[in-house]
Image (cartoon, rainbow, N blue to C red):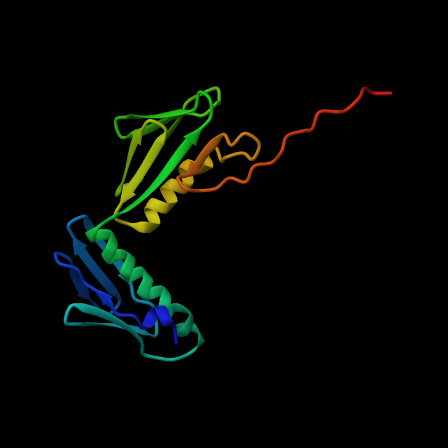
Length: 182
């Protein structure tokens, strides 16, 4: 049995959870999310907690038991607190700015790159830090990954877009030849 799946999920103040046969709806101050209940699993609301259990014990439900608990937990955290990813731009002349709701980046290409965030995700720029925030963890992570994909950090000078706190493994450059050609 999954160790993660067995843990109950506490419902914080201001979050409303409704459970149907196939869907869990979570509503809070930051927004509203829905999580589909996977086959063979059931969700119960007891007092101020949500408990996930297996209605049928087989290999498939065993695999998805912890997943469903984590998805519901992420939905509750998202609508109450929200999620944030921070990206850092490194490189001479590399910069980002907001033009309305569009993120415009200058990354050393012949043209500026524009990125429009998906619905439910907000972007903000503070010097060389791009903040991606929202209530859906999957959307926030996907938006941050899409922005990072425009110019991944390269290993020689470290130029590009990386997550704050990410360590880029640096390589030594080409060593100068000793002596001349003979």
